[in-house]
Amino acid sequence: MAIASLVLGIVGIVGSFIPFVNFVAGIAPIVGLVLAIISRKRLKEAGEPTGIATAGMILAIVSLAFAIIMVACVVCATAALLM
Image 1: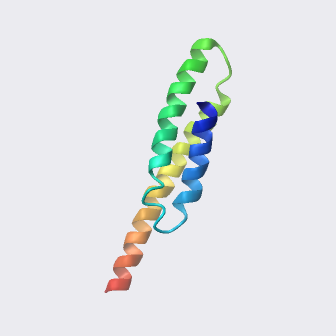
Image 2: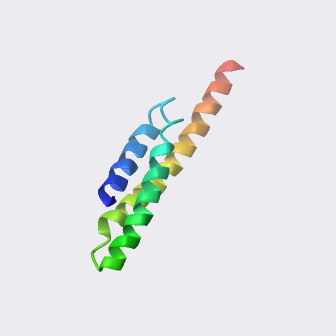
């Protein structure tokens, strides 16, 4: 699950920079964040390293922020074109 959260964080970052894809790119980091939290908890209980899960959590948070910012940019640019 830790690797899946890492991959979803990367997909979210890449998808957030593609116009009109970033509207659905916000779904990947949310799922990645949930997976990262669950896998960090399980790895911590098992006494194993949590580095990949932590990296996935950070990437998911950053990609969610990028997706929100880019959606706002697309909305503003579209509004400016329509005026």
